[in-house]
Length: 305
Image (cartoon, rainbow, N blue to C red; front, side, top):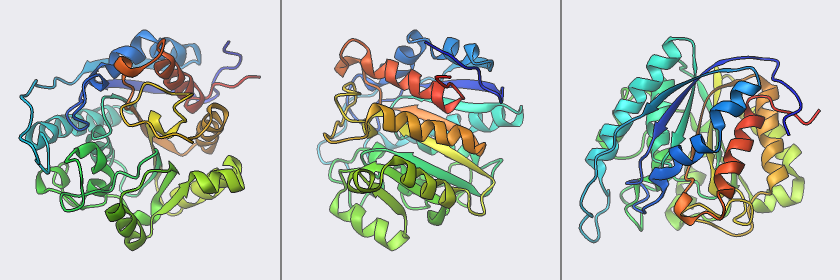
């Protein structure tokens, strides 16, 4: 039951992106619908926010890629993200908070590129079991949802990094990954070279989510003008969020996740967010979509008392 209204009411623009091409797995394109039917708009409006549902960006249906393709569905993913970047920038120009609901994690490219049209120095919290810093050279799958953070740092195919201008990128010093527990060999090298702060599940277990969030917020707010939340539901443990395409056991608990979202709200630094990788075809009783909506409540000020 909702018990407390948010003290900082916002105009929130809800933007759906039913994209599954970045994951190349059916079901995640149904994520926006699942979040809407789980009453994300009503929950945020109950907290006192004004929610404007702008509808979904159209995604074309495509034939399967050829085996061994290193950048699957590149042209369509670039097109969708370019349109998303324009939509996000336009909504921010109206003074609205962009809340993007996916869809796979490749939509982070368009969200963040759009935000960077208004916020030059952006901190990023990447809540995910995977760091998503593969490139064409290191990917084992060719799935672009595993490359989205690398693109935002300026590494990747020109058609992706050029969205919103190649100069629109984030500083690795202001990026924090939380919940990582599945990292490819090439990603390990990339993360070390870039100096990105990664809180693996080992560190969350060792230090607790409070210490992790304290350090994370210090890093993403150091010299920045705002913070973006990229919330991949596979950051949570599969027992809490079974309906994701790439589940990894041993993840963040329900309460740890809420604490992280509550901390983001209390910081007052959040300027944008996306919620991604909810796959209703793999879910159990809509549990993952409900968890995503409940986390959104915490992001926007919902409290127990």
